[in-house]
Length: 78
Image 1 (cartoon, rainbow, N blue to C red):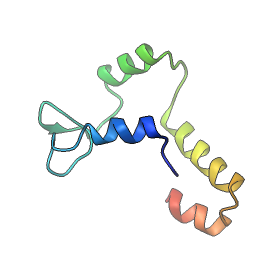
Image 2 (image 1 turned 180 degrees about the vertical axis):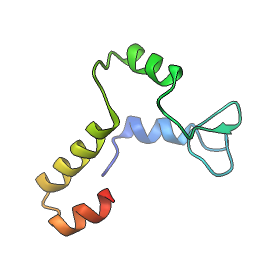
Image 3 (image 1 turned 45 degrees about the vertical axis):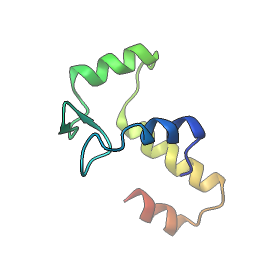
């Protein structure tokens, strides 16, 4: 799924903070998202009732709306 300019900029700011992972904290990769820091970030962003499965559904919907074949969409979604 294409990222908008703001998302690309945010990800590029992470370059060099960790050798193998895009997102890290204090030099350690972020491997879990259901943490107090994650929920605090959601709160700061004003995102209430958000869950990870929402991202998968949103991604699949965008693929289907843009004409991606069902099989290809399934492959992308894992």
